[in-house]
Length: 306
Ligand code: SF4
View 1 (cartoon, rainbow, N blue to C red):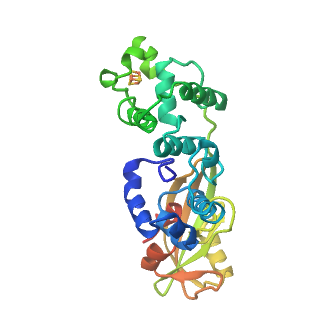
View 2: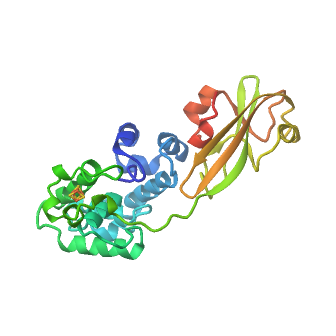
View 3: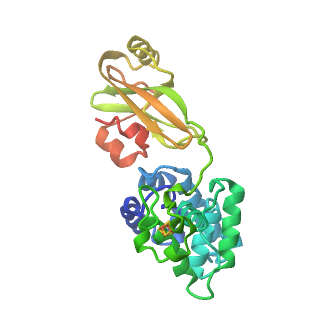
């Protein structure tokens, strides 16, 4: 469930299998070195989820003697476990009568009830969760949760027209009965993403590239990156900065522009590829193959790898 947040099962499948192979039980996950954990998570994004998963494993091992919480309330005390995930685990693993309300479930209910309120308003979400909890069946609660997830993923689709002709809920669905399925769900107006300009340096020296570790907090905390500066530098400014870093720049061989989108901000990146004569001690220098294998390099930077 933690891996599946923000992405599709198809993307997660291989990660999940690799992850379970590396950490077959909660003790192994609790004891894993962070670098290894982040490397296995690389490409899934939202890295704080991996760290929280490990914190949760440590809590289970060291504070709960290895016993996994099995109620909604206790699950919520685990780092990184919010109402949706707690609901999914409580109902699917432990048959508790708690819904897992995500975008799929909200969409189905908004259509079934022809709800005129925006589903991304926290109060509306809470009300939907409460109403759904009240109609949970006596048996097969895990299957009920999963059936809603599946219906949202395969029938009451998020993009494009829902497949109402196949839908077992169509006799109960107000939006379908009114011929207005596509008018729901309603959403609040979106705030636009903040754009930040960034200049990225691909400094190469004797076949190695310069990287450094990001700070312990904030966006992409603790991961690795190519040296970069806020703002868009001109070529000469970039060469001057590389010289001040002590990398003895020889020539700028290429420049590339790319955009990378996070939840709340967008990076507009200009990358300069610069051949250098010295391995500045400000950075770690590694071959591209080693970078792919050993260092957790987020996609925003990885896309510049030669
Ligand atoms: Fe969604 Fe159509 Fe089913 Fe209503 S009838 S829940 S709109 S798929």
